[in-house]
Every structure is written in C-alpha cells, then in structure tokens.
Amino acid sequence: MKKLNEEEIQEKLKEFDGWTYAKQAIHTSFQFENFKEAFTVMTRIAFEAEAQQHHPNWGNVYNQLEISLSTHDADGVTEKDFKLARAIENIIEATN
Image 1 (tube, one colour):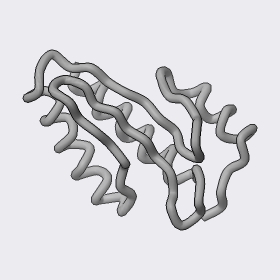
Image 2 (cartoon, rainbow, N blue to C red):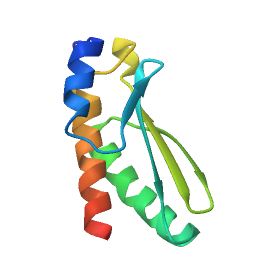
Image 3 (cartoon, one colour):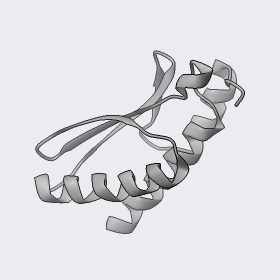
C-alpha cells in the first residue's frame, strides 16, 4: 500500500472532525460517560479492525480513548488508515 504524503493526508483529514496528523500517524480521542461505554466502543472497533486486518495503536484510561493509526508496512499513513478511521467514526456515530 502506498504511503500518503503530508499534503494528501491533510486533505483527507478535512473529512474527519477531531483527527490530526503527527509522527507518521493520524490521531484522535474520544470521551465517554464511563469506562463501560468506552470499553464497549473499543470492543466494536476491535471487531472491525480484525475484519480489516488493520489494528490501531490505542490507549484507554477510564472514560478516555486515544487512537493512532498508521500502516507499519508502509512506515506511515495509507488509505488503510483512512478506511479504518471512517469505520471508527461510523461506530462512534452509531453509539450516540
């Protein structure tokens, strides 16, 4: 998969609220009402990530979820990352 350049990444990020680009990855974070809600969303994302065979680098503390996406094989951001980011956004929207 082709690594996107910074201009391409910034253009694609215009479609995503709350996502940024730094350190060869795209990043976002979400806050939920409690740990249970955060973990429920993480579980849904995990199933989608497994289906796409593309896994996020993420962290969770209580109701906070931080996500970073990059394609390790390409050493940067590719279309795979934006495909998973869109799926994550759809999961978040479905829970609201």
